[in-house]
Image 1 (cartoon, chains in turn red, green):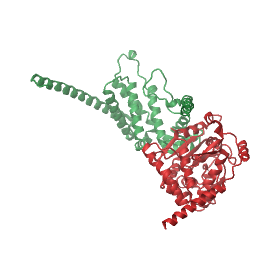
Image 2: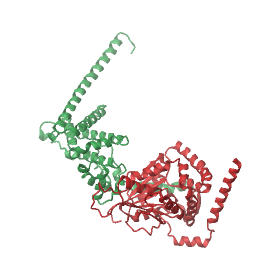
Image 3: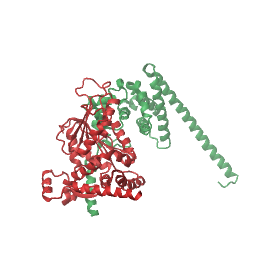
Image 4: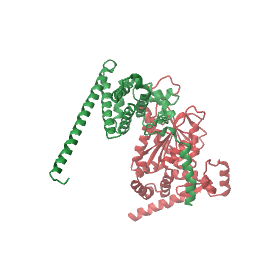
Length: 325
Length: 254
């Protein structure tokens, strides 16, 4: 029994790795150089990067920038169906508390009972980036409708990955918003949100997504572009644990247990190995808050709020009003 | 490799520290006569809070007040996220601006003109009363604020602000003590001020004369208790020394 189970797991693992290998396009110099010529070079590369400026990190690996998008896409395509249960296993359910807290602090929705009725716009226009499975979007709409009695706030869920969006559409059928104009799904790259006009969004959220972006600074500037003056950029992301002892335990858990859980539950060890590595590579709270400030945002207070001792953190930035930006 | 990285990262951190000094954060913890204090809040927060403050008498210390203030200042409802502590930031705004306003609101007559010197006690009374009167516009909403300030998350910040107020009052009244009475003065004034503030929320008398009376009584208690404590410590000091001297005269090796 035990041995057969191990064999099955092993086979799943082998198959999944084969599948992933098959999905990756062959490495061709011509295609790479073409992609690099098309994509504008990321600005503000420090000189120490030197000749390696066209590579980026994929977990602990260093790969060509042009490949990162595809590799991340492959990871999330392979985890899309088991995304929710895996999050529960990995975070022991705590990710739900983080997401609830994230939405509660943002307090989305315009209460018609307390706000002046004169205003031209009703409700908020929320853009949820990398929110394919709709986790944040449904919470936003629930909060707006039930707590703020707001029937107009709408959420646009944007994700680069069609598999995650399909998962979100499927889950939306179980909510009251499935066929309402308040919820929309679009496939878009956060670094080039061509479908979203300038100064049109009240609230830009990205939960557990920005660490997978190839150019975080480009994405931040794109967020700055689409937000209305006074609009808020809010990001929920894994971060750095403050306490050394707790950090040691956390590193044990994330590098020991999470890939194993991924292998057992989702049959895909490598994707979860990437997840924990990308968490470890993400900049610390203060650094990322500095990046938000560099993109032109005002940050509230120190700029971030730690959750569960810094395992995750909420970062916020407000687009300034009336400074000719 | 390592020294090279250090060399490149060091100037960057230095530059980051010098280019964006966040002037409003550089609050001095002492009273400087030579440098003006920077404004207590950054400009965007200040704009939202000051417009929101005008709505407090009607809407109280609530998130709705903040949203109305943000709209008045040209921001959006969502911009209230700029204030990480929400409504407490509005309360804090009231506390900080009123504390800093004391300096310009209360002017003592020049000693030479007035002929008679105004004592430190009288100055403390005048300043404390002026600070209590600054609560008048929002006093019918002040219990909401006290309830929020008493939430465990905000208790440390509230006490810090109370301590700063007591310190400000003693400083403006010209107190220059450097002994342990520095602490007792601030502690007792904090207690008296907060008691008077709570009393004031229930005060229905015209022009808050009862609050004034309450404050006078508490300050009187303080001088009485202070005098008693002074006498007690003098007596203890004298008796202790005498006892030791008597024992020494009897040959005890102390």
